Length: 317
Image 1 (cartoon, helix red, strand yellow):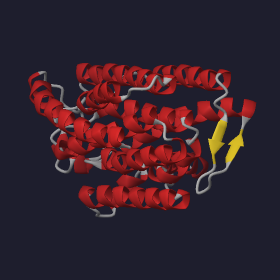
Image 2 (image 1 turned 30 degrees about the vertical axis):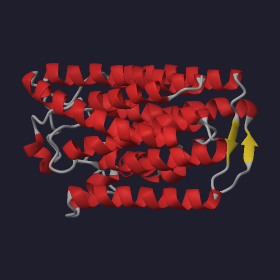
Image 3 (image 1 turned 60 degrees about the horizontal axis):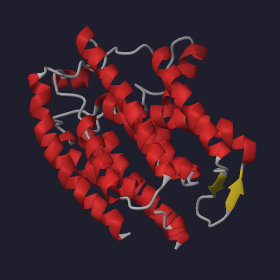
C-alpha cells in the first residue's frame, strides 16, 4: 500500500506540472473544443482547450512504470490498451479541430477499433485462465470459464463508451474517476495485495485530482476523447484483469447510468415516434436542463461514487 500511496502523490504533482505546461500549448495550437449547437448552456465553452487527457494519462502511466517493481503482465497490458485508446482519442480530437465541428472519427471507425481491442482482451484473459471474478460485497469467486469471453468484450465496449458519455460537464468524468479508481485500487489491494493494479489505480486517482484543478467548473481545459477513451480502457482492464469486473456496475454505477440513459432515450424516441424520457441525454444533461449547476451535478456524482466505494470496501473488511 505504501507504493500505491507514493504513486498517488507522485502522479498528482506530475499531472499538475503537465497540465500547467500543456494548457498554454493547446491554446497556441488552437486546439479548442467545438461545442454541440443543441447544448445551449455550453455556448460560452466554445474554444476551451481540449485533449487535456494527454497530461493526466501520461503522468499516471509514467508514475506507474517507475513505481511498479513486480513483473505484472496484466498491469503492462492495461497500460498498452489505455495508450491505444488514448491515441485513437487524439486522432478523433484532431479531426474535430480540422473539420471545425464536433465530429471526428466516424462511429463505425471508433467502434471497429474498440471491438478489436475488446476481442484481444477477451482472448488474452481466456488463454491465461483469468476467468474468475469476485462477487461484490463478498470474498466469493465465480469461474465463468468460456462465458467470460463475450462478457469481457461487452464490458470493454461498455466501459469505454460509458466514460466517454459521462465526460459531458466540467469536472464530471474526472470527479467520478477519482473515487472510482481510489476504491477499486483499495479493493484490489485488500483482495490480492497486487501491487501492479493498485499502483495504476492510485496513480490515476492522483493524476485526476490534479487535473480537476483545471477541469472543475469553469473548466480551463477538457480531457477530450483523448482522456475519456483512455480512462475507459483503464476502467475495463484494471477491473477485468484483477477479477473485479462486476464492481464496475457498483462503484462505477454512474458511468453505467450514463449509457443506460442514452439507450433508453433512443429506444423510447423511436418506439413513440419522437417522444423523450429525459429532457436531454445522457442524464446529466437532463439534470442541467432542470436547473442544476454543473458544479452541483459533478459533486453529487463524485459523492455517490465515493459512498458506493465505501460500502464495497466495508463489506470486505
